[in-house]
Length: 306
Ligand code: ZN
Image (cartoon, rainbow, N blue to C red; front, top):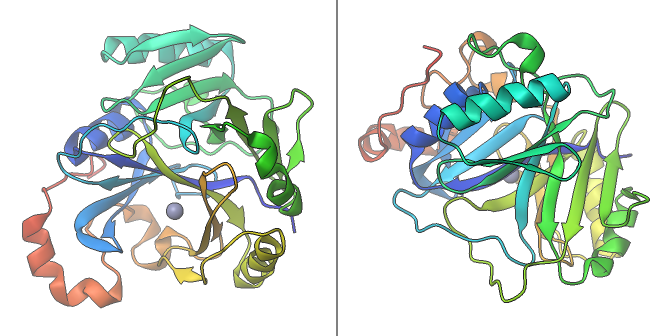
């Protein structure tokens, strides 16, 4: 059962209104779910993605209001890589992001790198994939230039060879150029690329850093099987956890990156109409009784779609 590439990437932000402005307005993603951190329900968990919040397009943020900026170091993802249609789309984004004041640089291989308002690094690449495009409708982003979903992530590792056995066991294959591993499913593929951490850089979780990266599994049966694979490869997976929109297993891979395996059989239409994703604050059943209290604690947040 190959993993179908990435499921979602979860990062930390300190300022939810600014986060929505950047990801929904500037990048043109759809805010598909406005909920709370299930482990700490007085803070937001925001999900962005394509129109339906399809696995492979989902970027999520835990908001910790006022959190200090973090820095990516060994064992952390340091860049999120998105696919675009090609050079014209990249040129469009270079202009649009610069106009918005986002720091933009071109790096080797025609890759456009930029940071969000809290310092989270993204890269845009010309897609080399036949994977179905995962786009969101954004009126001021021409359809041919819209983001197409994740290509992968880049992580820092001082000893990436230590990650090889568990990656291999999970069905990742190594790309010829060395540091990149690919999870290639029937329809989608996703890459994790290990880079040497900058010298004397100590990573610290905080605003603008990635918390974990989730890979796409079919359902509970596959999740159970994959959990066994991780354990047999020497990992320590959590039990299956109900995340309302998917079921998940977490473990830290040997380079230190927090991996999640998440199912794609539930989705965001489970608790609101697919046409109205992200409109209202959604709470898991166990927190519904605290809705009034939580709504006074959370910063009011408009979804620009509504
Ligand atoms: Zn997750």
